[in-house]
Image (cartoon, rainbow, N blue to C red; front, side, top):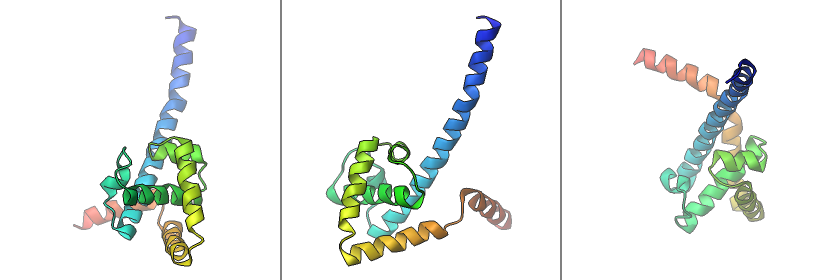
Length: 138
């Protein structure tokens, strides 16, 4: 392989690493949203994360998770889909279903509460610092 080809490959590898790191952060945030929805709905997080539809409650909780990520983090549907291991069209379908359910005042109030939790949650760096400090204290 020639020198120019090797330099081109090295240059291409750097953005890919940044992309992977960003995707890992997105997946961590999606996991946080999923855990929050699991706590709020009583649907186990493992069922929400399942690659299969599982059951109607798990599917609805998954749709709620994707909707909350879309609205709270201002992510485009392609990013939501990637973070949750789904296609952007699946994420869009779920978001539309949840948006329609917001016509129910009780459902809407519940989602508003979850959105507030996500807005007020510390960022990933603050959580790492907190976790490090707590580990040192224990």
